[in-house]
Length: 320
Image (tube, rainbow, N blue to C red; front, side, top):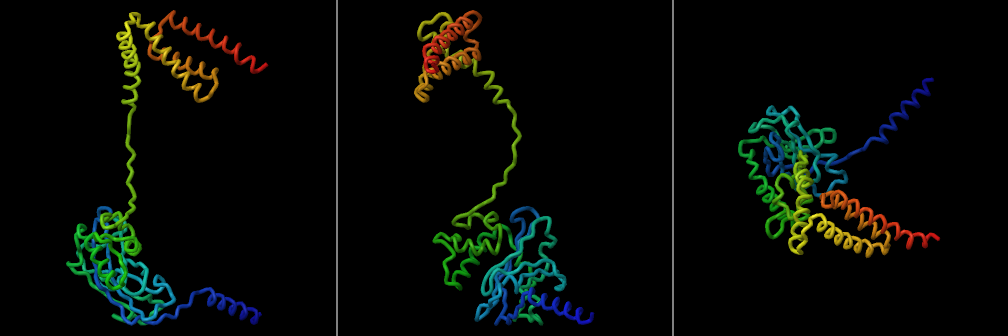
């Protein structure tokens, strides 16, 4: 029984060793902070953005990802209470930030918080200032107006561009595609905070559903018959037609023939053309009250006879 337990324990230990990542990373030659800036109300009232330009210098680039070994951390004014962290994206000279929305933000504007670029305590023991850790205590000069955000980002891009020997800015002083990639990785949402510093930018539009009524539609429904009748009355006057109903019938018939012609040109089906033109004329006539009483019945009767005769002459032979 003891032998079985020993085997189980040994197997469990081996499983942990095999499944756990093993890091053997050396200390960087130096760790430093170039600039720290704090902005507020960049996306919403009450939020805060803490931006850092740092350098975690290695002569030989480690095989481990920077996000697994180093991080940016914000500590309380006592220097020991850890408040917020974010893994670094890259080693060497680069940029990173921590954004806190209004609901997450607990920082007091203007306070002397500790900002650190530090190795992971699980991998670096001990943590030594200027070797695998660098601390910056915020001062009043680090807290900047939101209006300064765009200009400061462009200035930071210029510093990195010189050090990297990589073009990050356009001739007009905006972030090109390469610069945009690095800065959006460091400051997610930057294109919405200061879209003007990007050569090309993508923003999320804020959509607010508008309430609407059918007032305009109702006015159209009320006025359309009047407008059509006015048109018919105008045609009556031009051509000397004295009876409004017969005049309206004539103009609607002309419109029906034109509609039938369009339908026939599209379908090459005389039956569909006549039916479509006739029904269109009847619908408009009924809607505008042009054909009234016996005249409407007379027109409908004539139309019915035409359809029946057409069916006998055209449809039945096709079926037979």
